[in-house]
Image (cartoon, rainbow, N blue to C red; front, top):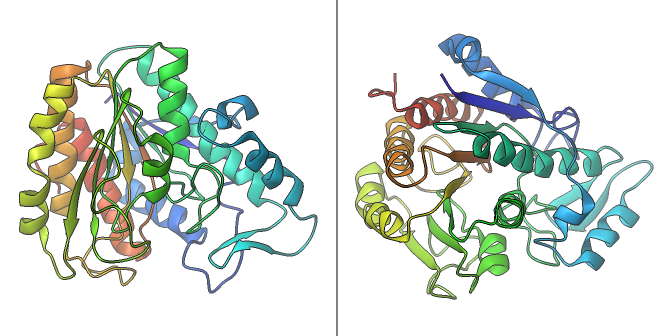
Length: 310
């Protein structure tokens, strides 16, 4: 198996509150399911390095990046906005989370038929060019995309986001950048109340009504795969949010593990056709711990090309 799982050493220590849904147990739940499924033994594993500051500036206002460094507390918790807090360890966790994406890009681009999954937090897809939002400080997937474009002189990178929430930050950063195509599914209307209509020609969206199940999801996103093949990306990145699962109360969609396996497998088929199988996936949402762990296992099996999600 050529799938490598990237982790950041401080990602499990970022904890703003025992009541906050985005908490360290998310990563422990994933690790538990990787162990019980046997995937832990067959995947490769790597410790990420913190992202370099100049790579953050590929996707963020340098003044915003400076402000995050300056506001990092020595003690206690500060709130950048109502959902997004920082403890003394949060900045380090966020740097490792963004760094994992860049390290995963390096590993995937250094060979063929390679897929990576970044089991990191805090998530990133709500972080805008100059604004923290929705648990997110830095936009991990947009940083990885711009890093890939710059370092490897890529002209076409695709981002696929199937979180229950629209990746407003990613769209905010890459809208109009024809080097990056974004395919996004999300519950709509729903937080953050954006995404439809799309803001630029390089954005494809599949808004879903509350209560939509896996069949509706598959029908809504099925046009992505031909669009991706036509676009011919040289690398596929995934904002892998699992909070559209039926057991996750963060949203009102009704997806199951087999739906995450299906979309992951379809993306793997596209990657095999257009970019030598190169895929980097990064964790976004997913707050029901059991459903999250099971869905990540199904996702990784789909990325590997396994025929079944079980």
